Image (cartoon, rainbow, N blue to C red; front, side, top):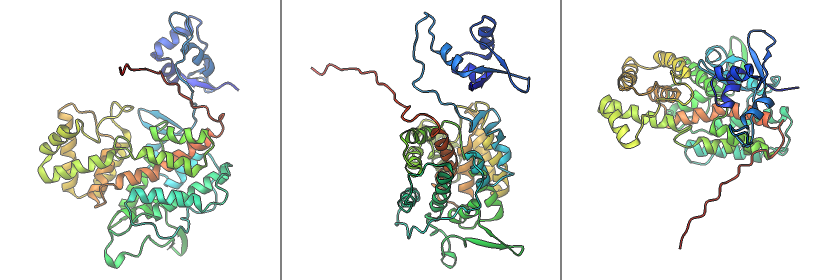
Amino acid sequence: MARMLESEEAARRLGVKVTTLYAYVSRGQLASHPAPSGRRSLFDMDEVERLARRSRQGKTVETRMVTITTGITQLTDDGPVYRGLRATELANEASFEEVAEWLWGVIPEVSPWAALPLGRPPAVGSWDRLRWALVMAGAHNPLRADLRPEAVTRTARGAAASMVEALDPSHRSRADRRGAPPARLVVGGRTRDHSMAERLAGRLSPAPTEDLVRGVNAALVLLADHELATSTMAVRVAASTRADVGDAVLAGLGTLAGPLHGGASQLAYSMLVAAERNGVEQALDDTLRWQGFLPGFGHTVYKGGDPRFTVLWDLFGRLAPAGHVALVRSVTEMAGDHAVPPPNVDLALAAITWATGMAPDAGRTLFAVARVAGWVAHYLEELTERPLRYRARAVYSSSDRS
């Protein structure tokens, strides 16, 4: 069965505008096919790729080493769309667990998202605890090489829950420093498991509230996947070698650690702390002086503004004290007055974690837990492709050292 592309995606692969795409159709260089709905046109992906490889001189050139076709997430001006459902709507309507299993494309299991009995984590920082939990979860799985979807997703649930369990709750008061919340709650006479959002809020915040849990859940949903982000590519490369899912997620976690990816919210957090201490104008000027850019602003995909920021900004207004809201608003207004691109999800994440008393790296921690959902979805999808398909070639350049 031919794989079909919508007109916008076909034009993007060809590096042309949609109007030029239809000019190719009128000249007979490309065939369009009506979609089942009859409201749009579809294009055969193989035919588009053949046209993309054709140079203007009629020579064949390689435009890419591998083509990645995905049915997981589509990036639109309205934000990411998870298998046809808008993430911005799911953020207020669904739990993170429901969204993760929707991304995975599997029938949800009855088994809970339960942490594994890994023992006491080492006395290290949050990021190292996340990695420790992943390594230990793999070590406790005697059949970690089982690549059946049901086995992979079962492993993923346990690994994600173990990552949260491994976080240090030492920010709590001495009277409440008993670790994570109990595994099960009694609500209305019925017993239920704590959600991932409840557990994560309890680990990250000194005083988690229902509003904060809703905010954490929304952030988890909005950050669950973002198409072929750098860390997701690392996971897919690992999957192409048929590494087990734990090792593949570790590859994603290592890539996410960079300050230009998952660590961006921590830079924005520091900027907000400086704005509260020294004033907005000095904080932004100092940030530009020493970093060369304002963290939490601009996005390569969302030129007109990140829709995920809008969702979290609304929740931030209900979570934060009025003074904190006013300060962040002053930051965004001053940036806007100087033609800085609109704020993105990293600023919203920084604002929520800063205003609710979380640690400076809490945004990165939340980002990592959330992205496990998307990484596992891409891992499963990559397993359906031929193995070892990622092989770039270098252009060797010798230098004269004489």
